Amino acid sequence: MLETTDTLLKGLAEGNQNRWARFYRDYAPLIERTLMKHGISHEDAEEAIQETLVDLVKIMPSYKYDKAHKGAFHSLLFKIAQNKAVDLMRKAKADADKIARFAAEPIIPAEEDWRLETFNIALRRVFADPAIGETSKIAFRRHVQQGENAETVAADLGITVNNLYQIKNRLKQRIADEVRSIRENSPDGD
Image 1 (tube, helix red, strand yellow):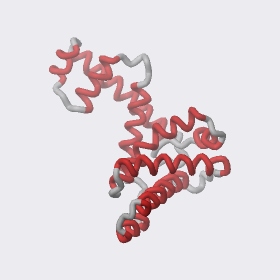
Image 2 (tube, rainbow, N blue to C red; image 1 turned 45 degrees about the horizontal axis):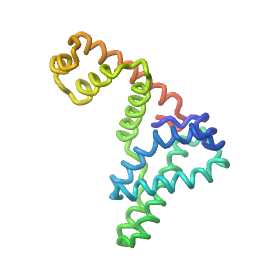
Image 3 (cartoon, one colour; image 1 turned 180 degrees about the horizontal axis):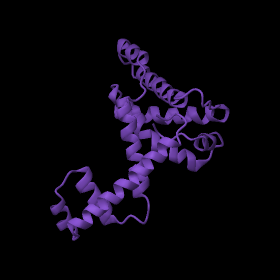
């Protein structure tokens, strides 16, 4: 699951803008994807996210995290997002049966969605490191993520195939370390 450390939750409760920015960056894509998987339009998903954040700003100062209730914060977050999407559906005068079905089913993301988003967050964090050069990022994206042939990518970038494999292995290790850190620091974690 995504990192919702005590520090992050405390920062949200205190109104720390950096924590809110990180929270939005980490969670908005997963909330949007989850709502859209349940039939909510892109525009409505974005609006539901914004309204969810407004509610969270009000809730977080009094929110008490309880380590004994694993997953409680994520459940709260996605329930708020679901309720906001239902409100938008009602405003748009959507079919009552569709609204009832959507409101009745839990929208917590599937485990594979949590894993994918955790990987994406780790990738963004690693790629944000100024020590990672643009050539390394391009090489990794093309060879590892897009599956392009190593020889072609290396030739296009003016590096050796051996350099490409070194880049791949180094970045895979950094990303794996970051994923591990996210999971270890998550009170709602795996």
